[in-house]
Length: 78
Image (cartoon, rainbow, N blue to C red):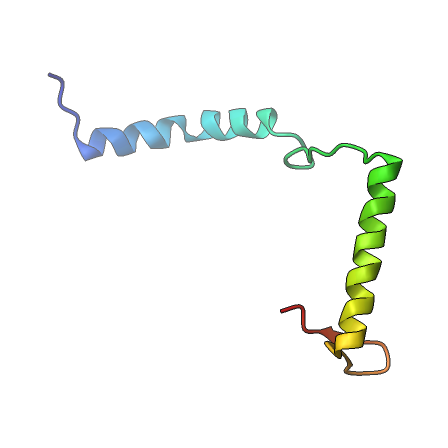
């Protein structure tokens, strides 16, 4: 079995650091990770809009929305 000391590991890291960083920089996209998304079907968009409007109107009726300023509101979503 081969034994390796911490000094050898640290030396190996310092020797290969520049190469490893270069590989990482070239393999990663310039804008970070690519966001995966799919376009929603028109019926799905309409259904989600109706659900969100109904939830908002229900919260207004229940008094869970409080106007905290001229342009800000607090929505107690619990």
